[in-house]
Picture 1: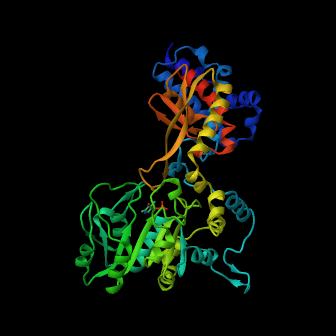
Picture 2: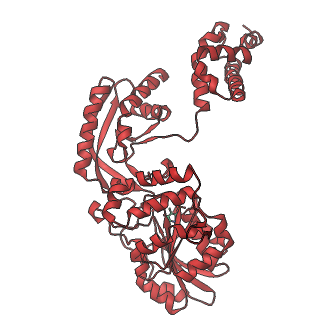
Picture 3: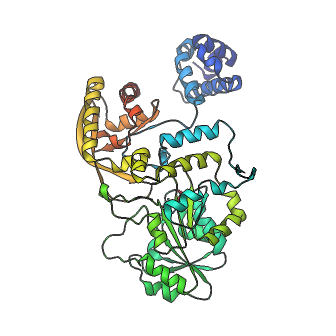
Amino acid sequence: MDQHTLFRAIPGVDETKQSLLAYDPSLAHCPRESLRTLIAEYWEGQRARIRAGKLSDPERLALARHLPLLGQFLRERLAPRLKKVINATGVVVHTNLGRSVLSAEAQAAVALAAGGYCNLELDLRQGSRGSRYSLVEELLQTLTGAEAALVVNNNAAAVMLMLDTFCQGYEVIVSRGELVEIGGSFRIPAVMAKSGAILKEVGATNRTHLFDYAEAIGEKTRALMRVHTSNFRVVGFHARVELSQLAELAHNNGLLLLEDLGSGSLIRFEEAGLPGEPTVQETIAQGADLVCFSGDKVLGGPQAGIVVGKAELIAQMKKNQLARALRCDKLCYAALEATLRAYREPDQAKTQIPTLRRILMTKAELKARAEALLEMLTEAVGERFLLGLKEDVSRVGGGAFPQYDLPTWLVTLKPRAFSALALKKALLATTPPLLGRLEEDAFCLDPRTLEPCDEALLAQVLTQAWEKARLAR
Ligand SMILES: *Cc1c(COP(=O)(O)O)cnc(C)c1O
């Protein structure tokens, strides 16, 4: 059969559209133009198969045969691109999966701010124009002990704004052990260059001493800066200068001490077996002039960059034109305020804020949840998957506590008809997609990051993936 005859056998767009809407009336809600464009795109795919010699029987172009596939194609292409996914990876602050899940209180505050007008820039006491900056400033002062605070779009923006405001054309001294790259192309040297600050590296990769900083101070020095090494960990022979010593050195020389805490936390996590990293309030107490950190990492709130510190410095940052470009919107403030309010009672924060609750989950609690999941899944999908339990570790993620283990229990799944890798791939296309971990020859679910509502979906999602992976073979 020659290709032209085959091409002519492809049904027209209008004919296809009519048959498809009769076959699947729910598609009538789709935007008309998208429907036409996508139908044309679908048939273009079949044309390509003809050209490649993969389709040579005109029978196989019969419209009726294509309606189910077309329906599926359209539904997938017309679905929103940002979707809910189930996180069974055990990585609590997963940057690819949107970092922190908001507390119920923060979700409600966002819904309220999104669905109506609010006093974002209105001072209700004076009845005059107010500043969005003041919405969470008092809370941040109380929680961190800092004189003042400012919130911007994210922590990268916070670092940029600090350097741009105070260090343009001046030298900033940073230890060579802290010139880090954070995932997603945030590199301290590059950010410095962009802000116009001049990076002065001191010390060695593994060890930097107070005298290294002292010797590097010169005419053009404006600040000493410390950067949390976030996503990597230096072990073995290494040394870092105490913050209080750096503060003394900076202030004796009329310099600023800036600290990029990265994840930044308002509570300590020793009870979860994590190292006692200094909190934001401790960093302020030790003499840092400005401290910045992310809102959506361990803090457990929305994407934001929070800067706390000396009042006169924060005031200068607020006046910088760049601050206007980096400001947050009302949804961010709504979520951030609700998140920060929970911290007024640390015990309340630990139960209300999902990120904290997940980091602090005990091994016994995780074991009980894994056992319950195992029982439920064995009942529902045991014929298709070989199920088991396994002791393992979860991670905080988001560059916080790198390489530190949080003990957990995993539910392991081995598909009886195909590989665990094929299951992992098929689970990316389920509704909702499910992300887990592939360990040896099993696909694993970590209950630490599963929402209660996700657990109810697991059996259904696994069944969908099983069908898909079996068909794909
Ligand atoms: C994560 C991180 C950043 C970037 O923070 P975002 O909120 O993602 O912009 C900057 N510095 C350090 C040390 C970090 O860990």
